[in-house]
Image (tube, rainbow, N blue to C red):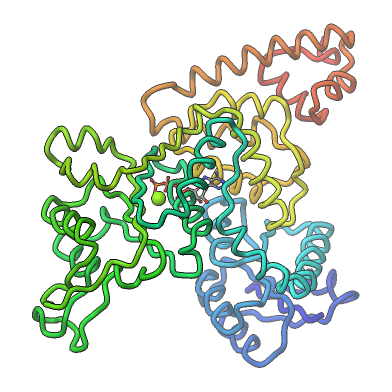
Length: 453
Ligand SMILES: Nc1ncnc2c1ncn2[C@@H]1O[C@H](COP(=O)(O)OP(=O)(O)OP(=O)(O)O)[C@@H](O)[C@H]1O
Ligand SMILES: [Mg+2]
């Protein structure tokens, strides 16, 4: 196995080389430019890359290396634990990170993990490919509310001509459900095309949806262009955020659905509608219809079947289930120890209002797994992230939640300590917490440990 180490400090390069050279073949580079050159010339298995180089930004080096060899594993080294740059590096494709001063045991462990992962990855690519479709369309849930949603989706999936309207707050999984309907229907071999009606400029929406004929306006492509309706032919078209579609486009959409055909902009030949239509909205579309911002006749066409996905706080049975799913997924991805969720952390997850729904839960777990490395997810891993989320919402303040949580913890810990007659090791065991965490929590709660008494 060949490893390239990149750092602009000679002493650090030497130290890392001494640790790794008994097991691996090691090459060193003092600059980003030299590192990129070596990546072009050598068949490498791993790069250990310092973020703060003098000649180039570490992220630019990372990008350049990924461009030369997208499969090459990279471990980033940072001067201090800066969550922002760590998350950025991982999102850009780094495998893991190390914080300076690098601990030799950590280095060997992370490098070993990374190279094991590489071998494993080569072996399982084939299996993953075949599983990709199910993974991509996986909708995790076991709460009775979500089971109702999935049953309804399954029932209507085969009727391709029936428009479906999916409603629900942001992040509840409307996009995922639309894909499930697509994969469960006969439209599955065709494409799944999605258009976000809220994100496309008003004057571009129609050409985007219906396409245009050559020369239909200045700047138009000579050969004309297919719109999303045509692109989704024999498949599914998801009209996302339909609630904010401009009224002028609503008229056109209504006639497309009624006549089951449409015209490209500037065209005179009708094109048959051959895609299943699913729309999704997180705004209160019925209120919009009452205010005159959304055409009622169009609404009645689109909501022949309406599937409402309840917010996460109303299907509490899914919160821990989804959290455990994401925990395992990201622990595997980032080679972390995380296996389970402590009962206190579960309580915290259950009490939180989840304004950003499943998306928020997924992001918080991904971030925590990336930045921490313990077998159990603990309340202190979650509190900082949950407080940020809570600030965005005006209802249900975190301060209240934290006080509630602290008081509850104080009571529980107090009772357990009484039972164990102040034996912290035993108390930690029955609380499902590492001893050091219990000590730390007790200190925070102002509870005296027997040693202090
Ligand atoms: N039941 C679920 N199982 C697994 N992942 C889920 C589930 N629900 C949502 N997700 C994940 O949460 C994220 C948000 O989901 P999605 O984009 O479908 O939400 P949405 O309702 O369309 O949100 P928005 O209104 O903001 O577009 C995605 O990353 C998705 O994979
Ligand atoms: Mg969406």
